[in-house]
Amino acid sequence: MQLTATQHVALHRYTFPTQGSAYNKYIFVDASYTLDAKACSGAQVQVNATSQQITGWVLNKGSLSARFGGYQLYYAITFSAPFTQYGVWTNGTVQNQTSSTSGCNIGRYASNCPRGRWRQSEH
Image (cartoon, rainbow, N blue to C red; front, top):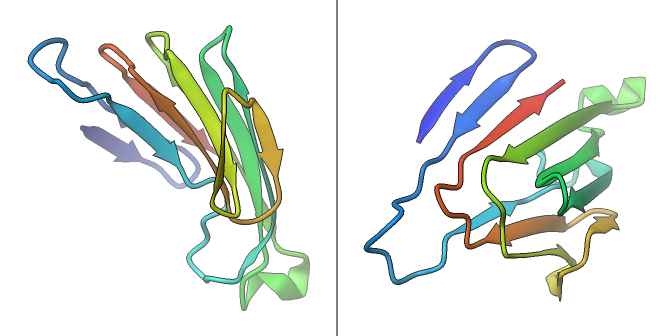
């Protein structure tokens, strides 16, 4: 794993072994996670299986930012290799091969990513 960040952008790079692993490789994105447990005021996650990209946003209305309408955090995750399975979850219910969901307590997963490296940028 490689990580780097600036004030407005974070880059993550994950590399999985190409051989020797009998287990599927999964990437989970908790799309509505906020540091203040109840600060999520809305979120959306969407997958484009053709471009191998996950995009979305979360509206955070924490104890300080709520007075000003909160702030919206956007992200884009691009995979360098195709994933064979993907899905979303809403309130703990998984929906396989589903490309989008919205609300709070949502997320997304992808699996079987050979040499699965991805980058995340936040604005």
